[in-house]
Image 1: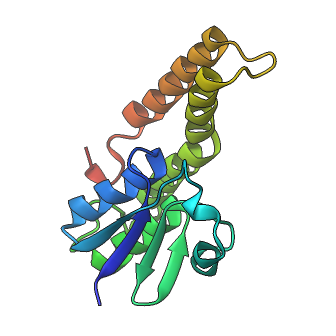
Image 2 (image 1 turned 180 degrees about the horizontal axis):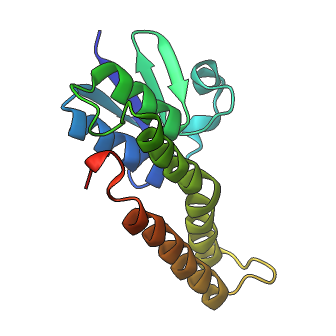
Length: 154
């Protein structure tokens, strides 16, 4: 059985997993989940992921959610080398740090920015959210440049 990825077309976590699969050269079946219709909120979807979040990876009945966990699993299982997910503890720690930052800060801010364009968030103007996203971008760039030589990776 091939891998199946339950994904939304333009969500950053889903896009990250699709990029990881492509970088690893792994064949998979893409199953689009219509977020707007609430397809992820059904009882059937909850059997795959009780948190009802997107994306979900189905590897022959092994269900895994959370994009970072999926990316780590894929790199461990299908990586031909450790270029994407290093074995060296310091280099891997830097990758994990960035994955945690994406989940805790970057994705949240993107979501707030998108949602604020659809509805009004109290105390959260578009200018404030845009400024926060720029600040987050700067915080991502600094460690990228500082740690570029860890494990001699670019």
